[in-house]
Length: 287
Image (tube, rainbow, N blue to C red; front, side):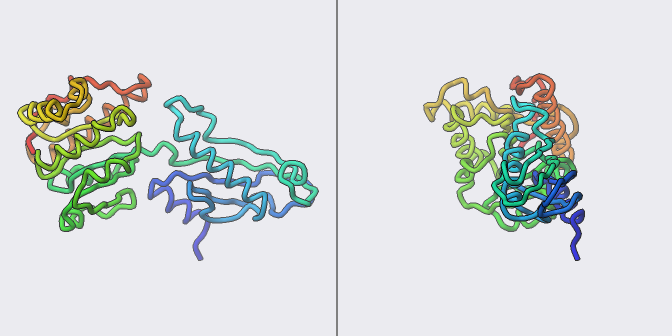
């Protein structure tokens, strides 16, 4: 028999945001006892119960609202959105015929998941994902080659996406995602980058990087100009990517890129905004 805490552990391991609801006090006639617990994700009830019916529907409603608010914490949301007490008269507040009252504690977990989107499952992409999946993040990797996607490490934090035209995934990228273009080369990175930049006015990712040399960066800037895009968009992405350390070995490149992602993420936490200067992006790793 699967226990409540095993289900909770599964959610932790997968990095899925969820709310744990616990009945902490009751008075009078109520549909569940003190200590009853329930897990709620953005999709709704996941495991357990706090009594069913209208009271459970209200808990699910509040939990979903909490997950949405908690996801904004640190970017304008309120920190106290991650834990709340609710006290309801079941008759007056919930519309149940029970004459009792119930106090419920809701606490959000995994609510600040770090989303990372990687285009390309090649040697460096594989090495990078092997590093990242040990961190507290959720990773999506997109590639047109099933044989390369199959080589990625097994992890509940990783989603594999097989697409012939990888740029088609751009509209699905979460707006808070750190995005890396690490495909087979310039010809496959270029259409993805241009698709992202065409949408930049509406969706500005906190990190956008394209693997390559200074020469590739110059080529990409020319591509942007030829596409008729504003010149300032040539400054919103990192290329080269990674901190200036290590060699051109895939594993060492992966460490340097992961370090830069952490650096940019932590700068955002401290300053409240992403530092888009590329002073730290002096690495000349080639694709």
